[in-house]
Length: 140
Image (cartoon, rainbow, N blue to C red; front, side, top):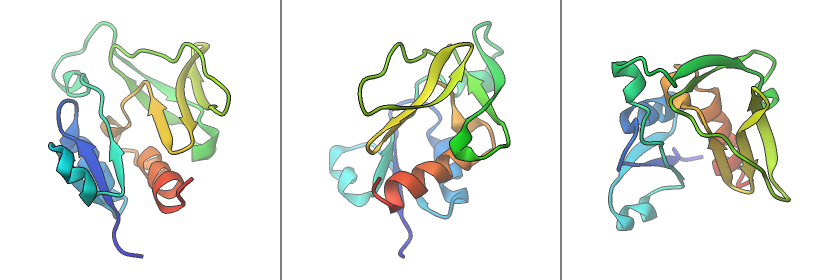
């Protein structure tokens, strides 16, 4: 199989960190700034806007926590939360992948994967690998 091209929407957030994680997963990370560039990629990551802040300031609403995400295996995953929202409710066909403090923080549906934390800041590429394996290579 040829090398996959994974785009990262380069408007805000930790674009460089996502691209580094994608490269560690043996795919090609491409910064996407214009609509026509979407034709160059197999999948797109849309980063949150606050992910670079935790590296510069220790915000009162930011924290790290060990998470149980069964799809990633038995080893816990360190979630980095930066003024993180959570998912209030899910509809039919949505799989809840993780909760923290009783709140939904990760879910998937069809070819969509969302999280309320920043996997690009952890050094642990399991979520990026999961995204590539489950959603890009297999097409869901």
